[in-house]
Image (cartoon, rainbow, N blue to C red; front, side, top):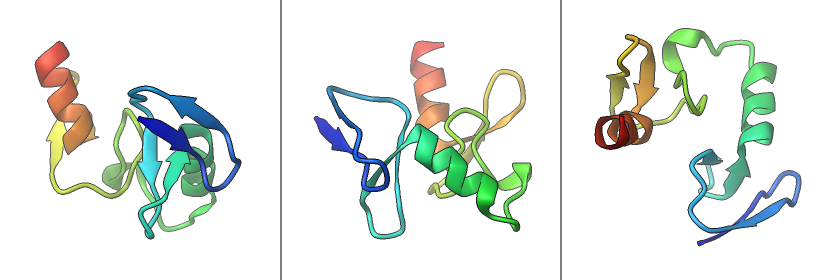
Length: 81
């Protein structure tokens, strides 16, 4: 896969774990995603993934420490420990 962040323009090849998409479906790197989350006043730690910081997921799960994680991170933890 080829990833390019629509906010900062960074590009990466391969399967990258810490990429998100914006509301339009465009790729956003972890750094830009975190900064956009920090800048939102209505976001709380209760509705974001403890691993990748996404706020949009089809299902919330818990990791082995009991922290809330998105479906993708939860499945990754389940498969890879």
